[in-house]
Length: 458
Image (cartoon, rainbow, N blue to C red; front, side, top):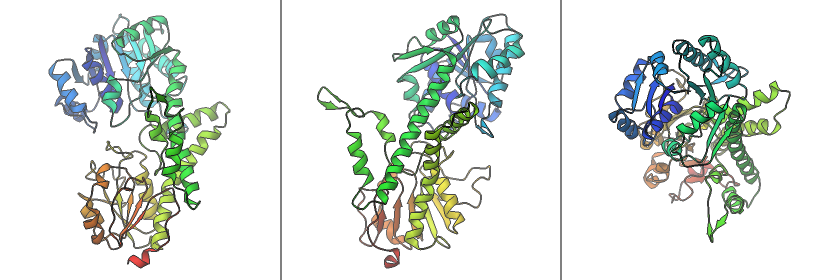
């Protein structure tokens, strides 16, 4: 089929490349000349393993092109996906980009007499597709829905594994205005071998929010258990949660073998969740609930726990040092999770703000992030270093904020002596297997710290 994808961000480009690799003819549309040039050159404008290679392949095969000519893209396609951003707004998600894309598609539809299916893949609250989007397309095209198809097709892409998630999905959810829309989208996804849910537009919208909110809830639950263990002698959150993981309803035994579903990855303690999806989606669902007179008690608690977690880690550092004022602290990790360079709502940056407010100076190192963004949002907050050696030299403490496996592989026996005080606070319990020098003090999370004070190490 001929597919147009409006927006070449994380979801749009990954989806476009994925459809093209499945044999569809895809045109991706964007307004940024720089981004268009980058993609045409076979480079992804963000880090995602496997995406550049697949992008180069589908471009070479003539299956994917990128343009700023939306009207031509709509004229030539059968299905048009809206994949623009839905950032946080003052009272929930900001739909201005979605509405603008819908209007632009509607204007293009005005010029063609042929049937097209317009599909929202951006994450939007229930009622958006058959409300804001439908009205915008109808208004701009002069056509009522039915003369064009209307669908909602949420994405379930994990950063760092998005290519595999698109090509080998665990599910495909399709919401449709009518049976004609559903038939077109069923044909588009015919080659995908996975469970498929064909449902209403609003069900499809709600599935996405329910899915991400469940994951966020599991993370905050785990971090609340960690806080309890940190106040309870002779407990260890890693041991506790491993015991929880063995519940056969979380990890069933199949043919005598234990199966470990990926969802248990969210039942671990850490510094909290971040990224472009979970924080935004939970907040959007909370705002949606309040608009309908419902108090989202569970989701409010999820956000409260998550918001408090970085500060709790900073309090652990401060307790060990005695004061943050004048201390130099190295942050190990800036991305919200390993495998990505995404720092949106990263717990690392939340911790950095707390530490800086307490008077600490900060260095940081991340395998994929070599400099602060050009928008000035990090100005004066921290110095991004090229290596862990540079970040740790002369530091009073190191705080692990992202569970990059590279940090466990560092030569800590050589690095600790370069620190002014060899204190390592592991906010992800990612270094528990490291063999530490005798004079180093290592503190994991989710357990009462061993007796001792940093003064003895000075």
